[in-house]
Length: 123
Figure 1 (cartoon, one colour):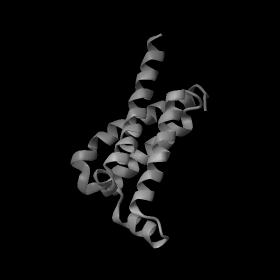
Figure 2 (cartoon, rainbow, N blue to C red; figure 1 turned 60 degrees about the vertical axis):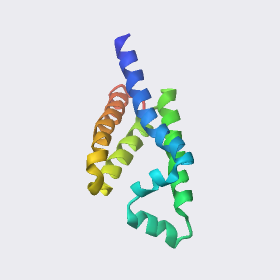
Figure 3 (cartoon, rainbow, N blue to C red; figure 1 turned 90 degrees about the vertical axis):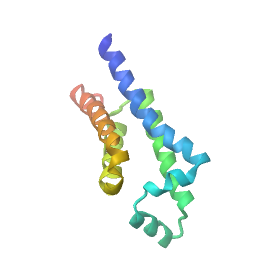
Figure 4 (tube, rainbow, N blue to C red; figure 1 turned 90 degrees about the horizontal axis):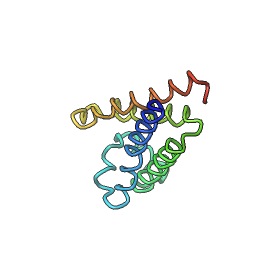
């Protein structure tokens, strides 16, 4: 029983870390758009994508990952995606490491979910 509770708590924690920025960005986009590296924003602008469209598209992906994690179904893939996204955010924003260091702990939690799914073949 405790393994199931621990697994649920990790899933809820990682899901919250993905859902909160997406929802908060709807009301305060300026607080979040700065986390996109300049080269990503420049690339988006070069193909006609505004900062808001980029932000909310990324937010939609975050919400999908959060909901998939909460569902508990085949969580290897959303856990792997969450790990990659979190590591990417940290690596691509080294100047903001003082804020983003927590994302490494979240990446470890999502990696643990992926490893557990892989181990039990619940991919």
